[in-house]
Amino acid sequence: MKIAASLPLQHNGADYAYEFRRDPHFSPEVKHASRLFTAVVPCLTGIGCLYQAVAAARDRRIYPPPGSLVDIDGCRMHLQTKGAGAATVVLEAGLGGMSSAWAWIQPEAAKFSRVVSYDRAGLGWSETDLAPKTAQLAARRLRTLLRRSHALPPYILVGHSMGGLLIRVFAEQYLDEVAGIVLVDASHPDQHLRSPDIKTHMRSGFRLLRAVPLLAQLGYVRLTGLFNAWAEGLPPRQAAEAEAFLSSYRHLQTTREESVAWEAVCAEVRCTSGLEDIPLAVVTAGRDVLPGHPELQGELAALSRDSIHVTVKGADHLTLLTRREHARSVTEVIRNVVGRGMLRWRGIKLRRAPRNRP
Picture 1 (cartoon, rainbow, N blue to C red):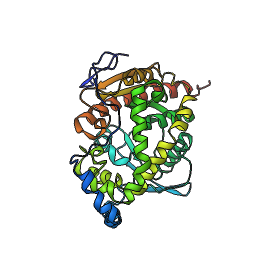
Picture 2: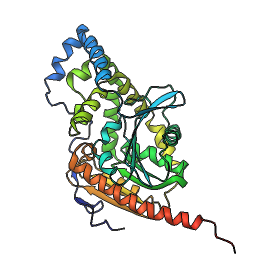
Picture 3: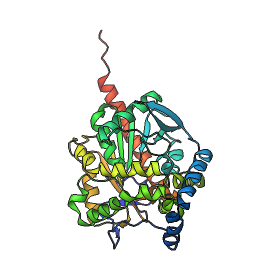
Picture 4: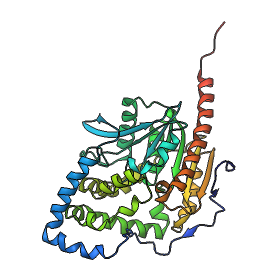
């Protein structure tokens, strides 16, 4: 399918000239590099631990849950719902992500649809539990959460990064409830097997995540602002929320657990089928791209017979959500899929409707 002319700042993913990154290794962006060294002394003397405990208690007080907490399997999970409409847009964050990351996209998408963002167990405002991090469990819990919150199908599933893997398993389990899918620079289950650069990037990132929970307890993550760049560009309130949780031991420990489960989640996704003719949009970042990524994104676009593949010029993996101008482009793609999805959904309903007998 050709890209709709109404989608600004986007280009055909196959033809676009991507801006590739030179170094494939993962490295957090710390604005003031000197912080990496000056933070060592308070951490070694124990002052950092005290600072972390006081700051974490302060965060819990000044950043209460903006949405609802719903009990799922004995674990209270956080969910925010905005807007109204026949379809429900469901936003699934990436590895270690949370609902605040959708701060630009959710309010804009709520102008044309009901939109739900949530936090997986152990992330953001959702409680931690001991259940394994599997895509099938995540899908079942999400569906239960949506039902109990009266966010009913048809669903338009939107997944960023690792969230793209999770929504593919959701679609496999509940295909009859899904009207459309948007993959936002989504992970490919074979990306680390097919691209040496992506493999290097992921290995170095996962190696850092093994140490991050301890560094968070010592106060090092908070003192250095190690992951603050992941929230840069969001509205002030949501940026502060994200920075608080990206310094939280609990949130970062869950992020580490999700990274450990990566291979298992990818194996679950490899067992899924194609999406038939469900409307699909694949949105790919145009900047800071690793070799092999554009081709893998093109394969994701081939999952459905009704798909578009667009690339957002100047956006990288994170700024597709965190920068307003890039998030606006993603929102327009969501609008496009909601429209296509609802046309297909209504057609299916008409075909399934019982005929009146004379």
